[in-house]
Image (cartoon, rainbow, N blue to C red; front, side, top):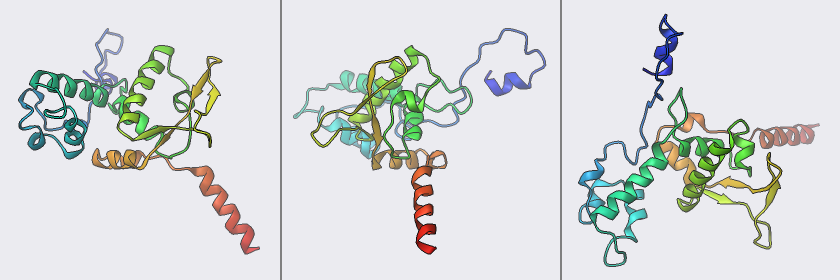
Length: 198
């Protein structure tokens, strides 16, 4: 039973195990049976972006056998599908993609101010995955040093910013309707236009 079904039942006081609603699955794994993927057929079974991500690990350039390949795919799938979203079932990866889809620098704490410490660690772990996917980047100054700000715990934390590939992934997952827009920039542009017209 999911959260919506539970809310519609009369016996809400009864203990019930709630399960996340998964209304979609990451497009990269939507029709994929990982147990059937091998080093020989991976290009035929995987979407292009996932096949390209794996190519370096496949012989002769890499050392993956079939078991290693499937373990890696299972790990990536976990990043793409694990969720704490009880309503939409959005994966942690997609939550972060949407949160940073305005392409503005921010910390995990900025975008998810209400999550607990353990959840922050999980979000940062998935953020590192998105860095390797070239969907996020860590903000650096002109000298190449990481830009940091003091987080909620009083410690310096890095800032992330979305990259164009992030929007493409959201598009492929049919999640563009959730994309954030930089309202501050829109407001500034509007004010500039109005001042010029006066």
